[in-house]
Length: 88
Image (tube, rainbow, N blue to C red):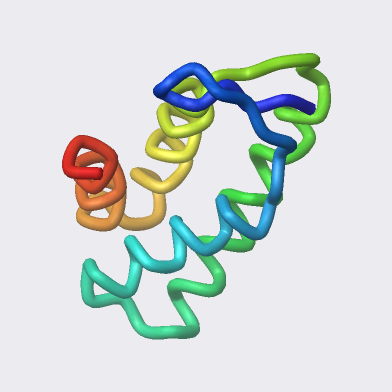
């Protein structure tokens, strides 16, 4: 599973990176550690099977899927997740 990053380089999919980014967005949105862990586990669990079906997927596609999944749990965290990408 190859992830194509925004600047064009590639890397192997690492579910811990997705988990950490969702977890951080939840904490930034004021969620408790427990809620942040639940959301990060749910989003990572939902996206990982989809990502594993792909030979190659863009980091943008993963972010869109993560934001959609996160919006159902914490719209504020999804907003922060999306806008953090714009700033980094």
